[in-house]
Image 1: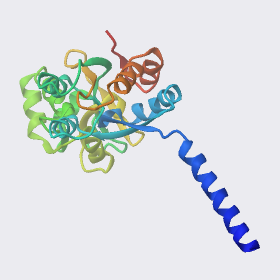
Image 2: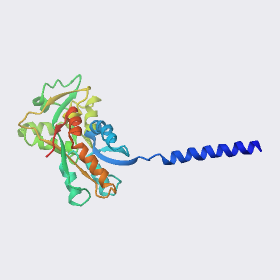
Image 3: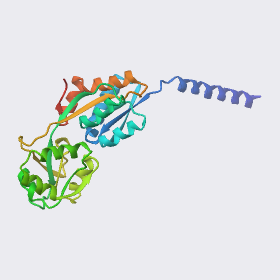
Image 4: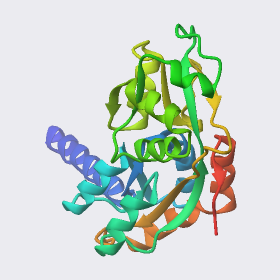
Length: 253
């Protein structure tokens, strides 16, 4: 009889524990698709946003903006999309796949070389002498910005740079990696992607192309209020302060 009592008591305690666990609020995932160049920035924004919205669990997917756009077009489960340029966002907005895009950050292009700088490049003008240059593909934002920048340079400079391109990569982090690994003499990336393994040269103002980041809630997310809250936080003074600290320009209308 005693064994039965003990068993019954243990079962009751387990049942009570299960009830307690069941009553614990479950955090709701909020899936944010964001351009690769936003990796550190959005990860830094996450704690502040979740502190204000403890019921949400932000889950990031970082990749090239063109890849994320395609996934959203194909019905991927995303709640928010942050692009590194307007073209991919505008295409989704035109198709009714996202809400109203809002600008939230700016950036600039730079030329990077390895720390040991084997090609002995001394600045932007020396880019025309590099033998191995890496850029983004034409449909990835950093690649499109790079081509727009080259279109502003003298024709001979642009021709020399294009002739030296040995690789085109699908996102800005892959572009940077080629230089960090010593597989390229130089590459064009965003200012915020400069690591301690490379040296950066500024693009002269005459050739500089403004980089702008739009963000929007995904129309089919099913959690529009939460998605809107994340968009608002990114554009809030707190969110802008984090972005500014990591090298982005404030870009709020």
